[in-house]
Image (cartoon, rainbow, N blue to C red; front, side):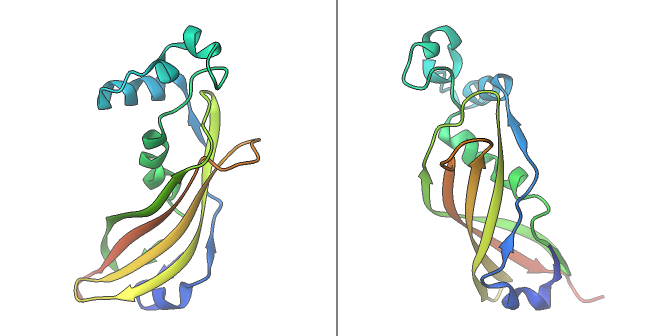
Length: 152
């Protein structure tokens, strides 16, 4: 969806998405494990994980969470902003594991829009679905500060 900075307050209740599918490959999982120094076997040891609780390797929950900027890209494009700053997440829940080789995508519902001194905060209830799975990978409320562009 495309809108302007001045129209943000009218978006409460609007559904954004779904976005594009993103592949969660074993290579991505391995790179995340290396970057975060979290090489737990359920993520990186395919042989051991095959006999484990998920029947194969799964992505770290925090990997799925860290994909939110990519998953939400293009869901809301706001003209008239200098930048959008990630202000955090509330009520993050990892609902179902993302198995290696699956694809995920996000849908968001704008929950609140709050103008402030530095910009307008947009809160969105985000669901990350797993292709072909009945339960989502995660649900969270994200907070983004939209900083208006200086008048020209």
